[in-house]
Length: 232
Image (spheres, rainbow, N blue to C red):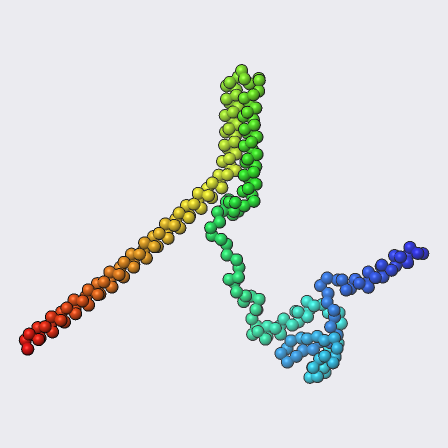
């Protein structure tokens, strides 16, 4: 009997708290009314509602918050002229990708975690390969068979080179392509600077030509004035 009472108390408390702890639920409004703008509002007390809307207030129970949002959405669109404000958010808030990051195959950064992992694996493979090369030279059974040792060492070196080519060829290509892109960008900047310098020189030459023309015109006017004075 005591055990049943001990089980009954937490069960009763859990049943009482269950409606409160339900996700997505909110406390139900008591009254619902519509204002002049057409938006639906809720109030727990009738006295809180303005007098002009009290006669039209409706007593409700047990509505979900998302239902109220759906009901107030048309009124909000009416107030905003039918425009969706969430869709009109500025698109320039999205972060811009850095253009100077070296990219490896698969779109990953050349100095990212995956590449570092590949480098660590490559280091381990090279250490194991060197250990095998040393072991081949120290095996007593192979000391008398120079040709066999040469074949084993050549095969091991070829396998290591093949692994390096497969594992890091893309990284090397990405590195050189990025270096080429940077060189091309530098060349474009140099060409742009040369073009601007040429335009500046042309402008300076045009200005100097205009100044020379003005000077010649002034000299011609001075000569005409001198001739006029001589004739007088």
